[in-house]
Length: 376
Ligand SMILES: NC(=O)c1ccc[n+]([C@@H]2O[C@H](COP(=O)([O-])OP(=O)(O)OC[C@H]3O[C@@H](n4cnc5c(N)ncnc54)[C@H](OP(=O)(O)O)[C@@H]3O)[C@@H](O)[C@H]2O)c1
Image 1: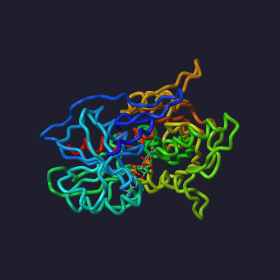
Image 2 (image 1 turned 180 degrees about the horizontal axis):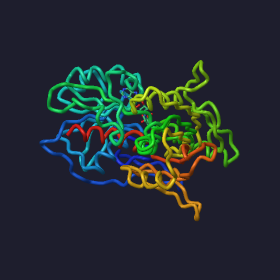
Image 3 (image 1 turned 90 degrees about the horizontal axis):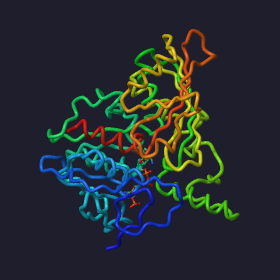
């Protein structure tokens, strides 16, 4: 059996790490025992990917109880070994037979895999928490951020023998709504204008490798290798690589528009977004402009955000210190700063904020594990 060469951000595979540059974003390897007779049996689908590896990290960090855990990926990875919480596991190929006896499956293997295997798993009684966009806009599937709309999961329970699909929102939507929702609850958002600065990690482990490789190539005066993105990524920014639709928005931008309406259960909220890739390794940043129905003073907004679960305020005007992707990398909380009254809106009815969040963590794995915790 081959052991898997580590993507650099993982702490679980056996095998040797490639030489790494100074930037570090590896979660520390922990040996904890969350194995418990009474815990659910779980499966991680896409365990070799960027999100899949973070699932393991988050499960371990949060001492998520489990009776057994199955590590699933494609045929390419089948047979590779990985160590998790001191035990060695063999990665299995995902098939229709993978879900017998599995209570909760955390999916992060792409939309087509979710579409094919999610319903099969649910049919077998597994509760699927899916990270892809496959089911997000399906009316029957709850789209959940635990701090924002836990009520959407009403009626989904472990131990009933009934499977279900639950969707994790898009990473940019989660990060934005973690900060915007507490303000929305106070003064009702009528319109939201979002500009994103999205990291390589949002496009998976291979994109992170490409940014690293290109950075080295460009610094050495060599032409950059462009496999994941069509254009040079290192020392550049470009419009998000998602497909551009006939209305001129790309799919990533439309996710923000549609998912916000579903999560807030508000068909009327006006949302527009411009999504941009920046050569940051991990964690997204977003500039968010909000227009409210009722006045909301920036001081009140700052207090609301300071008390919001999963949110930390970094808003030091004197020191010019505000959230950065590096500061939130590998962190659970979403950071908010640049909290200021929008001068272009009368009557204190507008605010500008700047938000940063680790989108592999709160934007994907952590949010999914929090959903799974709500099932326990
Ligand atoms: N990265 C993020 O920040 C983020 C955030 C939110 C949502 N998501 C979503 O999560 C999903 C995975 O993203 P990622 O960034 O982790 O991608 P990734 O690093 O490219 O990992 C993809 C994973 O899917 C597995 N896979 C591919 N084809 C498969 C197949 N036929 N059967 C079973 N497993 C298969 C891969 O296994 P092999 O190693 O065997 O190929 C790998 O484990 C995507 O739907 C993405 O949109 C990602």
